[in-house]
Image (cartoon, rainbow, N blue to C red; front, side, top):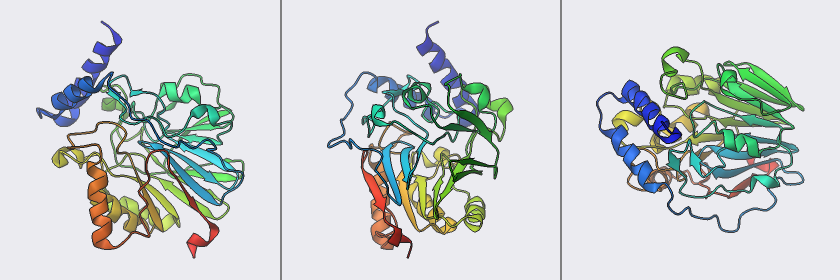
Length: 316
């Protein structure tokens, strides 16, 4: 049995656990197979200097849940997905927003959970190993020896200090496992969000999570968040997706629950997700919400490969 067949069988095990008799898993799989080997859009005017000499705070959206975060002289990357496919099952629609070969130093790599589109072995292999690899509780046994300077599992509200910056794991509300069957014994472990604090700046990376108002309010009480990186897709079918994901309206509400100054949406446009009618479906919904609520100064929609720089004065 080849590796593709194993992957498809494991997918259906997971689908059976979480979706029962729904026709959604078969439709998703069919869509994924059809796109394999298809064209991947290129990123125009790709940034050639991903790390700036010094900047108060910047976020470069590489695609999906992958962001390059720079706070002054410290550099972090979230859920690196730099390969053409996620788990050889779902192909990218748009290429990664940077060339990883241009990264010479990453202080911390933050992994929110173990799914193929968030914990990508091929992508970890492309990164410099001079920083720490942070994983959710239960993640160590899933990671081969990549020779990072350090590897650490993080339970909720535990912290790791790297070169003066503090990274704290915070709760998420998603689902666990990597291969389907392992979700049965991992329970509520294996997924997390992160808070990064350094020199007066605070960034929240939600990873992948459903909308949980009490959870977001708790995080917002504990930290003064400047920038929240919040997932907005997949959206459809909402009856299924809302169990483990947020839609754009929920993400905007989460921003308010967190008392975050601004939000950057993530987890869309990169892979075919759910049964959304187009790659920009979630983005289009978010644009309508931004216009209705008149929050253009709080929600920044980036294109893949675009960097948003926040100067010191944005906190005033």
